Image (cartoon, rainbow, N blue to C red; front, side, top):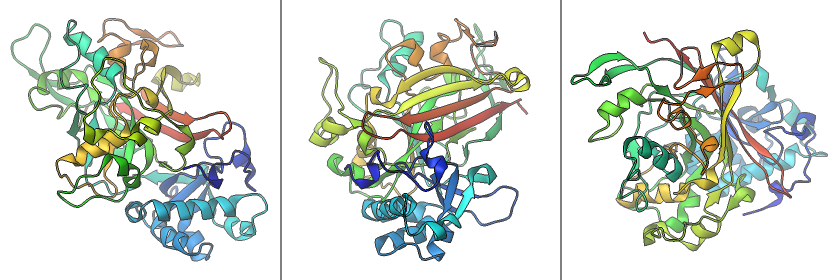
Length: 435
């Protein structure tokens, strides 16, 4: 899966793409849907390079591509990425290679492509695809154990967790792109010691540090996706914050799972890092000794050899006081997707195993990603022990759960010796007071 586009020695004629620590070097080339801010321009596809965006609609009109890359560019320049996602890996790879070659130092296409660049500072973004369905999983054993221990100290994990990727169908209509601001949700809450619920604004609002998985070509109804073919059906990954009202969730989730506690907002990063770009950072997926091995439909040699991804993940909080004082955000945790008990391919294979037809642009969430130690926990409910142990922030404030005015910022990147560092940009959302 490693090819010329991953070469750490590649440099771009765009200087900002060569800056140390940039999320968007020439080895990344993630996709988004954008337009210039405060305009009525059409939304269209773009690719990040340094501090600029390649306007794919303009690049296609300029005749910069040929062959399969032309077909892919035509779809990528549309108002959503669904058409590009539907084409499959051969076309994605052709466009990625063409862009890589055109953006390298000495490229003959530089004069034309330079006219197709838009500054990221001048852009706004929207959800990159029309999401037909959204499914959120529960794939981190560390998160499941930490949360389960709060309610079932002697038996924190449900008996099915180690056998089946747990998931529920979420609400696609309330998914927003980074910068999303939403009102604190209200719902039924059972007061401590009470016998009857009340309708109230959530007092235990939380974030969840997740990864979003964008589906590429789908599968016909009734035809499952085989575990050894899952990579052909995954376009790429983004960052995802599954905001959660823990007090509403505690009352409503039995017996059918989350409802109002989850459907009020989900925030995603605008940039989708392709599965091809992530190839150098894939690592073996393993199960602990003594744990049951996955059933055959969730197991393959490829899954074990490179089914995990060493994607570094961070959650930060910026309170209203921090914003006013200009002191910057406070990091809450740092973990890696490699710790996930179920990997993204197994989630996709299981989702389709009963015959469910996935479609281009469908979105899967990995569930909260937490690591083996508490400082790797991906939600406040874990970091604060269910609200019993307030988390002290770097400006002296403390949090058990989120307060009005708080912004949560998710960041992600991959790095490995011999390869370039690539990043995901920022996934930011802000809590407004309840209506």
